[in-house]
Image (cartoon, rainbow, N blue to C red; front, side, top):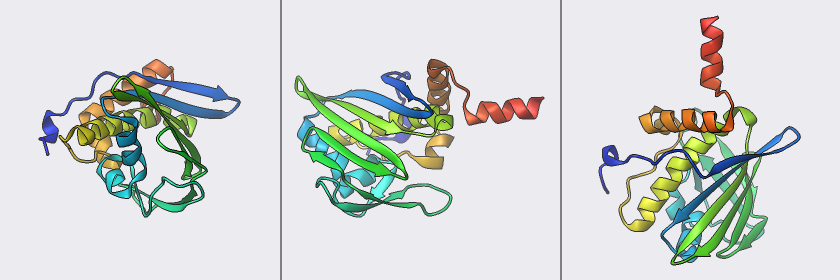
Length: 190
């Protein structure tokens, strides 16, 4: 494992928000240097998910109809979501629900690597937070698949990480939204 202090994420990018009435979907795109098969395994295998994702899974997410418990990592109280995999087309598409929000992962072969796209329905107040968190998760995933793991950085631990704060602000600016932090600060300053 490399020293986490040496890790610096790149600038905010590869994310957009799709609006459908009151519903918001965060769409993140990342190009990884690894085959779709290798990325698929990291998205579905519980042992891999424990290394990079913001949740643990008690079973594989690779089979349509599978019922899997997803345990959010770092939440102040234990948060367990039972999900059913609604689509698993290896190594191309994976769909399920996490904590009441739909997730769709799409993997597209790109040269020797993969273009990974995540669609995540999310509470509009936390879109920039989600983008910053997934940005770091994808970086951790890329390091893991490259054989240079830096360890999972999620939840409150990620929010204390200076890079998360910067990414959160950059994504909020890109999306032209206020984050809950800036709203509460505005209230305190008035």
